Length: 316
Image (tube, rainbow, N blue to C red; front, side, top):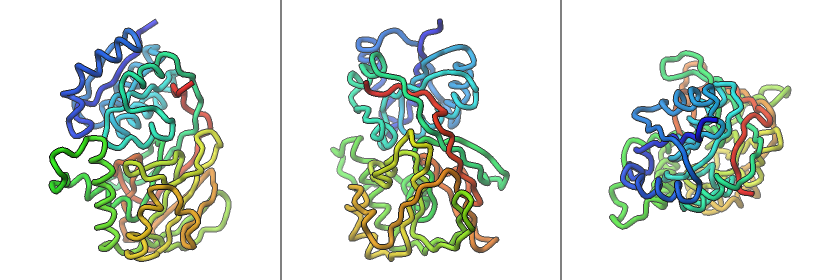
């Protein structure tokens, strides 16, 4: 049987994974065992590497990187149709999906889970949307898909590293700080988003929102507990709607959103759904779509839950 494959994104954690890899590799070998390695050199390569490995009968494929890397490896496994299992070796600044699974950041602890953890079948989201070229595309997601203010925040974070951060700011903290600061700035500048939403077989509704999240897992944005009640095994999305509450209220309630206590706010609503469709109210409006921390395209989009679709190595 082929050895487990570790797919490493050396550019994750702002490039820190490249420098840290010798230490990560040593800890993994000591606390997990033998494995093979593949390094990514370009975006989406982890999808190809994972799909090829899964088709080649590799049973455990480990993503070493942040949420984007984990999502790509999961997409490769799912696209292959093979019975491979996803393992997670965190090395990113966000770490939202591993938070839901309660996988620790320290390599030796994560390696122990890879060696002795249990296999769990989890739900996966599948979204069909328009890509950057305006062509319909499909991908899977593990964590959260969203639109509204969050997409603008992600764009702001990706365009420029926050130069104001102190040089001693830890890598694990820089992601949440960058997202949080960009969220506050974006709240002041971004207009509300007007969309038509349909949940399952209900009638389509007009909504005006600051943000709307279709959540499979609990966290996004580098530790924001946006869907505190989400479960990876219930066969449903948690759809979290933050109404047009205005910049001041978003800023003053930001700590509640990070801690997951925002669901009690009057203009925050949670519903469960297996299928969500969303499109702009104005046909000529472009509304960017965020999926697992990436910006692959825009609305219109259809989100469907795939129950128990992926095997994942989890804490025992």
